[in-house]
Length: 303
Length: 306
Image 1 (tube, rainbow over the protein chains, first blue to last red):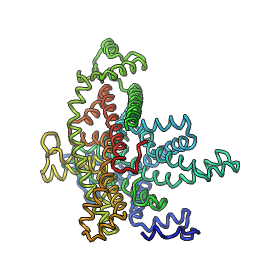
Image 2 (cartoon, rainbow over the protein chains, first blue to last red):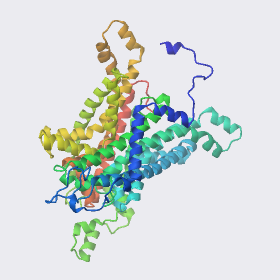
Image 3 (spheres, chains in turn green, orange):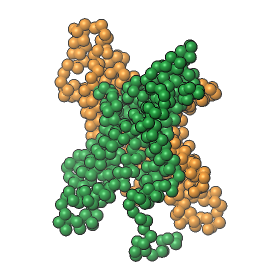
Image 4 (tube, rainbow over the protein chains, first blue to last red):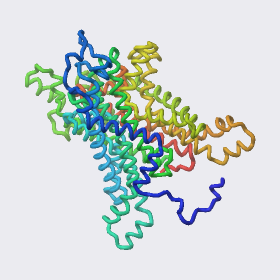
């Protein structure tokens, strides 16, 4: 193999430029990442400008939204995505539902990421009894069937938007903790940490100036991929009726409310389902591209 | 090896103990009162108090948990509050259906995932490779209840190829298995692709080609067996995904497994059943992980048991 014989370049001249600009530049050259970013942008715009994008109130039960027999309307010129069982405009509910998905996706995942990073860094850097205890607890959490745990938690607290976000965060921090732990414990053993310490740097300086910057790519990648998991979990909890409660629209609870009728009105499952899939897919595509861009050794692999 | 297994099994017991404590504590904190569910709306306060005493629910948390643990150590998962039968019997009656569903899902995810990954690796860099990898992402990002409802609509309601739900013949098994397997198929496609690419880069593959063997023989006889084993060895890890997935999939398809048992028990606050299913699930997840870790060094001798 030629690349095995080739001498290592002494000066890292061919090293790609670093910094946020080069990351965005390299991301922009990946069509799949661009598709993902476009979907995310679309969802954000839809959520923010929902009141201007639709003439209908998502909770208003329209008289003309049902047939004379009381059945929901399929997509038509007046109601672009049709209406639901109560005669509400489906497009309006999906647009406002994007708010729910995004808020929970970002809040729940942000909290999960913070817990995971904290646990991983503490366990990986300080080790000792506390570190061992934290990692054993993480192992324990891995043994829980995530959905059953989330259901039990959601049943204890009365589900509201914020409670659902917290429940998801409490279930989803485990993966991040494990990845951050592995990375921190290998970083903590590297020479540059010893060198810093022998120069007289204290623990906070090493942690914040030397360990955390190295963890940033991992945190960004897992943070992006995690939003996808969060969106799916929220949709599933809401579909089971223990997530976000109607009348607040969420893509999952739209399906929950209408599924009894789905054989006759498949659009009531199809459109919100497509929205969930598109948003989860978008964050997965962007996260995967970020992993390739930020960490070339992981190219095309699973973490 | 034996020492490794003994240590891992010891850890497994500790983990299960932890799971039992946490689940029991969570269910203890549940605001919904199981006694109300049993007694019904019109029950007098005396009846309610009697039932509470009978079930030992008037005792402090530690006493309640101690009793539960004592039963657990003797293999007793307790009695259902509402169904008036042993939890272990209820689970044993439902478990075969869930295992069948998971076997179907494993078959589905391996067949779809490995084939997709193999083709993508062989056609690396082509449009087909790109398309298959997008498909694998769609599989990973698809909410199971939506997949299930759509499959039902297309293949059961519209085309009439499969029954709308229920349990019995192989026809009943197809749609739920595909629904549960799609998520894993996405992962396997990606893992298989990268594993196959690793193998194809090895010297011995080039040697085999240089000897004059055809591309197909090298791919299927020399590369595939080495690429496929580490991927298949990960099936044990899937148990965790399945244990969450069956709650949704079984409820969409009316599949009479432990996922439905758990979901109905949660709605009726039937705590012994929730505890039992959670423990059985955790047990399966721990054993699945142990299986995957123990198999790894047999498949790749560079991996050592630690």
